[in-house]
Amino acid sequence: RSEQARNTQTIKEAKQAQLAVQKAIEVLKSFYGKAAEDSSFLQADDVGEEMLQEATGTPYAGMQSQKDGVLGLLEVIVSDFARLDTTTSSAEDQAQKEYDQFLAESSKVMAVKEAEIAHTENDKRVTDGVVQDLKEELELTQSELAAASKYEDKLKSECRQPSNSYEERKSRRKENVAALKEALEMLSQ
Image (cartoon, rainbow, N blue to C red; front, top):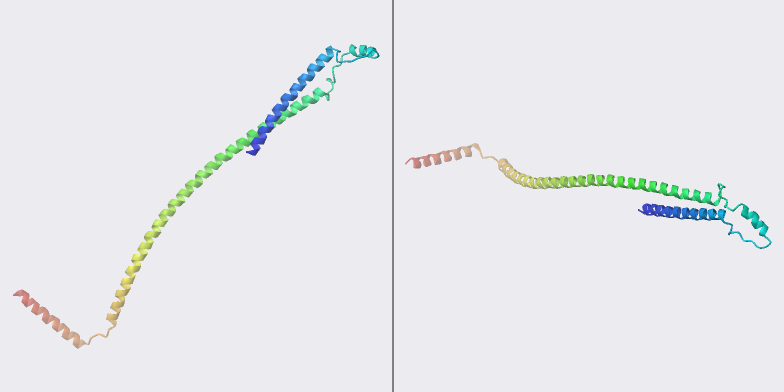
């Protein structure tokens, strides 16, 4: 924005300078015009009367006909100020156009980045939910594993106990059969 302020100030000063120089040109042209018609600007005394006669024969019009005279120089200055005004205005317009384009592109990039952030945050929330579910499932599986391991240890201890002899198992089976027969008789009565 400092560039814009500097350009605006330059344009303002160039326009003011153009007006001032143009007024100076008008004043000088008016002066030279009057000088050509009137010899009252010339001063004379008794001795210079003859010189005055000679001078009034061709009135003084300044150095207007010369390219590097005061008026020519002022006209060059006016054109320089006009060129400065034009080039600065053009540069300012181009800079403003580039700035507006930059803002538009930046707005688009910001919108895309904000959408990406929202999408990423949503993905994070979903992933956090999945992670929480998996943690709960892991805890449940670990507790089931612990229970199964405990039960396995119990079964192993029972399976590893020395087995009863064939005789003991046969007698136990007879006792179970006798108890079942007795229960059947009771039920059938």
